[in-house]
Structures are given as C-alpha cells and as structure tokens.
Length: 214
Image (cartoon, rainbow, N blue to C red; front, side, top):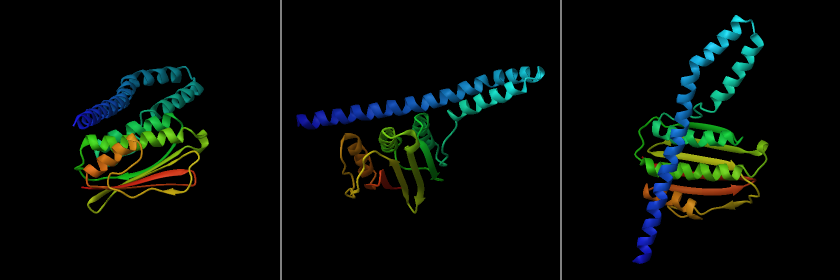
C-alpha cells in the first residue's frame, strides 16, 4: 500500500514536471516571436537609413542577419492541429539550435481526442530522447525524421533519429511496455490511449512507431 502511494506521488510529480517543462518551452518560443515582431519597425528604419546613404552592402548584411534570426522563431511544422504544432515546434526548434537536421512531414486535419498531457508526454519524451542521441554524433551526422498522419481512425506517428553505436535489434511490440523511466512514461501514455507502439534499432538509427486511436 505504501509502495503504491509512493509510486502514485512519483507519477504525479513527473507529470507536473513534464507539463511545466512543455509550457515553458512553448512560452519561450512565442516570446521570441513577440520579440521579433516588436523589433520589426526598428529593422525597417535601420534599412531605410542604410538605403538613404546608399549603403547597399550594409542592407544585404543586415538582411542576412535578419534571415538567420527569423529561422530561430520560424514554425518548423504545421500539422493542421494547433496543440500538436505547439508541442512539436517547441521541441524541433531546440533540435535546430543543436545543429540537428530535421525532416518532417506532418498532416493532422482533425481535432485530436488524446489529452494535451498525454500528447506532451509522448512527443516530448520521444523528441528529447532523439535530440540527446543525435547530439552524441558529429554535426554532419545528426538527423531527426518525423512523420505523422491519420490512418483511418488512428493517429500514426513515426520518429527516427541517428544514434551512436546502435546495433540491429527489434524491440517487443507492446501496449505499454518499455525500457527506462522516460520510455516507460511513453508506453504508459500509449497504453492509456489504447494505442500500439513498436521500437527498432538498426544501422546507426533508432526508430519508434506509434498508433493512437482517435
């Protein structure tokens, strides 16, 4: 009984931590966007001043800086579902800052029934693990490939990342079974939603496939 209470408290604390982390990341992304919009008029005035003085090379240099700055707040993916966009873009912007190449193809033109907390746990942990693994490699080898779409009444999610020292290995297909606390939380959320999960590792890459009923 005591063990059950301690486990429940641990799960509650973990969910609270995940929620706080997710909202902090999303708020940081939107704060960057608001900051860029606030400075927009200043950027225009600066370029007008350069143009008035015939300093066209300075305008080119300034535009290059703005282009680089804008990529740090640019939306990486647009799924068609605002909640999913917020979670994915907060994580993928972190991956971009760590020089990880991102290939994303996502389309979810429906309102998802999965709870925001469960989605944050699944996507957040998947991408955190992928980012951590990819960062162990040289920059030119870092890659995360994400694919999401509706397949019938299921939300299908596939995430693959390059990883160091992976060997061919097929993980057990399960409803809520995994390895390690972070992975176990993903599995628990998938099980709670009545979904299915498969993991596999081969040729320097780790992949996860998830099906969630909607």
